[in-house]
Length: 170
Image (cartoon, rainbow, N blue to C red):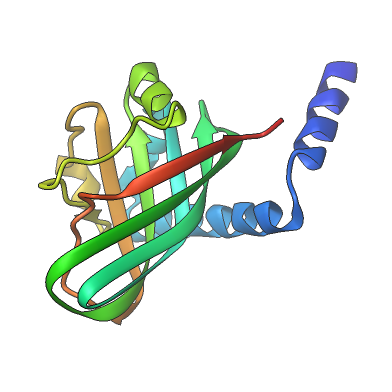
């Protein structure tokens, strides 16, 4: 019982109000993803870890950018916060808000993310979360990304060039 109380106390003191807000949004985003495609449950259940970015804002007019904050989970438990930044140049226009979840199949892939040595190759793209899509989705290099548009219009599901920062709870 004392261990449980200690864990709860550490969890509460490790998060500021902004983190708590992002965590609440991540819970809602997970529920929305599972409602859209219940098959994602197998990834949430079996992955060594995952990151949920409840809202990533993207915008572009030749030069594009994206950013968002998320929650990092290991074995289903929140262990820290992350942020994502992306800058791109090319033929692009529009704006979009989306939810993105990155699943790590192995402990090694999750550790690479936590060490800050993680980035996607330019050709990697996200699987757009929709009913039944997860059935045929597979990991590539121990990682798979699902994205769910929230609002806006932008024909770009590339994830190449994304940079991440990880901040563990203390």
